[in-house]
Length: 139
Image (cartoon, rainbow, N blue to C red):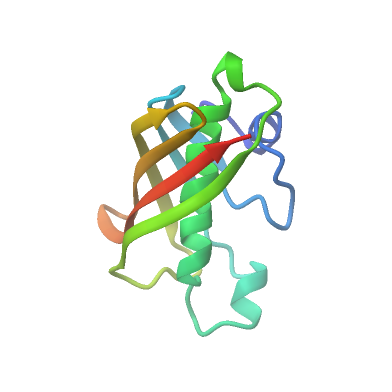
């Protein structure tokens, strides 16, 4: 059973369909780490105009949204938004296609004031799809 569904996620982050790119939160320690999922349905908007696979930039956005849930779940961040500040050392290791369940893990490794850094990893069946270090700002 999931910790949060889409409706509960939308209570924390401002994203909405078609750009809410995570389905569930499976595990979370607010301000420290999160594990989310995204099931790749065949009718996802990006599959219509992109070669058979999820664009890498959207997988980075999925990781960022998961990390935003972890940070914005802190009481002191209620009502704020998370903004992308940067991506470092992004590596794309496998194609993600319709039918895949993407597991999105973000560990917050540094926070200084409103700026933070997360270690992000997306996997399919335990196989690395994307890894990166993401920088964010809470506003």
